[in-house]
Length: 295
Ligand code: AMP
Figure (cartoon, protein in one colour):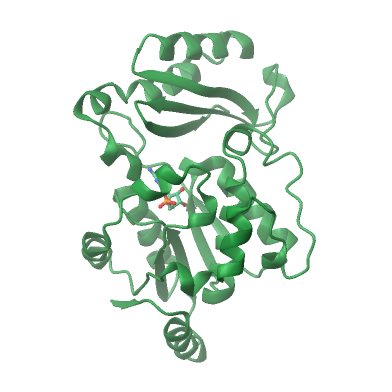
């Protein structure tokens, strides 16, 4: 496994691989790796000759500066974990390697930057107006910005994303299509702790007490899935809201039952061919998200 920090070094390596007709799989992450991330790397390993994992805490996708500052940075232990699953290349660039000062300044001033689309009009329609998009202004624009930059640097054949970030997957599929990028997007299932809590880099920041109550989030989703055939959408929403309200440390940001494709909320089961229940909860100062496909 090799560890690279500069775009040019990475591209030199990948050019050699491409000349030898090797396929490239790509797993973008923000580090603080856990077994959920490693599953994406393993899947990429099984489908490609070379797997690149990027570790980059992307400043443009944080709407909360405190969250950005406190985001765990554990490159040394991440490298060890990636080695255990046979990752070929770690790409861990500095911010200045990815963004110009002008781009960062636009973000600071909250001005939408269209430069990263290279002049192509990009519009997420209603996809980024709901759930995470509604609660984290500018978040998905930052995600799309960094992923498009990384796709152009790595030029992977396939890129791997977790269903843990269900809406992010939809945004990335939409961006890839609109920018006509020649990469196949592969969705990977959510990896959970033994008690059901969805693995997340943010879990490490929970206090012992918060961690002990955190499984209520996934338990709520499991319950909703179990009850879906007996209850209406409205009843399921009430059930979830009531269940989260039983835990004083938790504050529900949203619970939504949405069409799994358009991500727009539905009012009745029959409105969607496939539906997903999505939740965001503030547990102490940590914001956690999870979801479950209902049908
Ligand atoms: P992050 O480092 O949190 O930006 O996540 C990097 C990638 O790992 C994203 O595609 C996430 O959806 C994915 N991921 C994070 N947590 C999990 C999990 N528990 N199960 C599956 N994929 C995950």
